[in-house]
Amino acid sequence: MSTRVMLIDDHPVVRAGLRAVIEARGFTVVGEASTGEESLAMASALKPDVVLCDLRLGDGMDGVQTTAELRRLPNAPAVLILTTFDHDAQIIRAIEAGAAGYLLKDVDTDTIVRAIVDAAAGALVLTPGGDERLIAALRAPRVELTERERDVLLLIDAGAANKEIATRLFITESTVKTHVVHLLEKLGVASRSAAASEARRLGLL
Image (tube, rainbow, N blue to C red):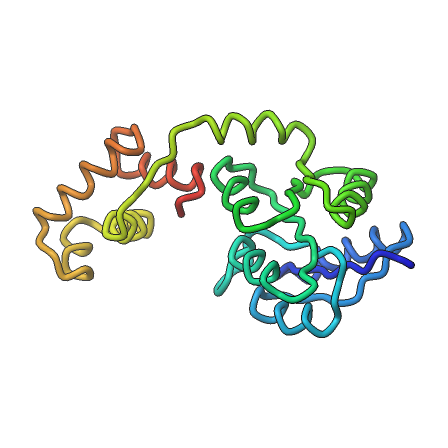
């Protein structure tokens, strides 16, 4: 019996390309979803063996959150994360959420096919070279932000100045400055723009 695959990606062209590749190799694509929310009901009804899920899904649930919810379903499918991003923190988050592994979107067709077969069999699947990155990420110290630091960081990333951040979060400008200092220390950077860039690299944004 052919392995049943479901696709989750917010770009129709990407889904169409994946469908063509997968079906040409003998798998059955049982459904496509553009959002994490849409995928949950679909997976419950269609019962795929393997789900290929984009990491970034626009507004709403991201690929990691979607993975966690899919893995809570009865007869939960194996979930493979597909991404153009190779951030170590995202790798860890996806696997902690129950993903069978992850692949970069630029891998070749044979790698995708092997990954689907291995995931269906219960194996851990990592993009070529991903095992070294995973080990390095596990050994690296984790950056832990408080909820308020994360709020400030999100507004910094949006380009807000300290005064605007204070107004939007109902705190004093002095308190904002304190949070910014802590963010720079934790992220090991010297500027606000560098903090936002490093946070994205670590998968904190």
